[in-house]
Length: 325
Image 1 (cartoon, rainbow, N blue to C red):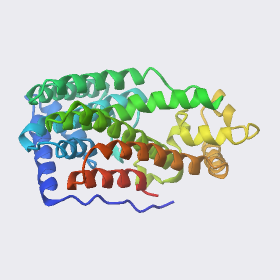
Image 2 (cartoon, one colour; image 1 turned 30 degrees about the horizontal axis):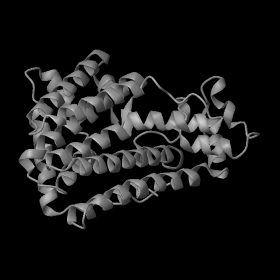
Image 3 (tube, rainbow, N blue to C red; image 1 turned 30 degrees about the vertical axis):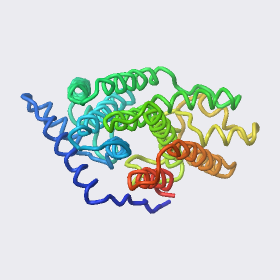
């Protein structure tokens, strides 16, 4: 199934500041070790939208903004994200990320572990250069949350209350925590009030939840060219996500609840399960849930008056929700 990706349109000023973040990242990754430099450039150079850095920059613009005061926080969040991806791929033994070969596959596990640690250390250096020491606390707590989330997988599909509790604990730590840190740190750099920082943290957390829910939906409905990995990858790895949880809740006799009790799923089982999840409404219910949590995040912005920065944060929500739908 092919989908059209919504594009974010950046103002010239924001585009220039994002280029400054990109330059900072590529400068920081230079190391005395040629191997670390090459592997670091491989993961950093894979790019993406740099959405977390963008959130930090735009959040700061709701206050008193200068690029100089926000650059280090925006760079730190992308370095943390890159480091977590390297370690995630190593733990999951994933061959590819966004269609590109992963660090441990291109080199080896030792190099991947070293590069991930190096990126975390670079992020710590960036935090220390931020103008407010609260940035260090915000990001260090996020890293601890991300790390702890690896130890709390989703283990059940029923009862739905338990499954949802486990699912939100997982994606809250895995994804939303870093979005929350990006927006909170950005508002700190923009000299926001405690109320404003709390509001931006709530916005970031909820948008992070929506982002991961959409990713989990795409694993069922998108294709390898779009995802950079085969559709149904979560099913093959035995990962329980929201569409499956909702589908199971719609009919206990469909057999989905027992999927992961046996051996790894075959290609035929994956295809059949995807079809069942769609037929039982798991996709539609998950899309509605993504929109619900995104609306909650948008409501947190009510404390801010209208501005181009607020408009951009709203546009980012539209982008998160409309990716490939």
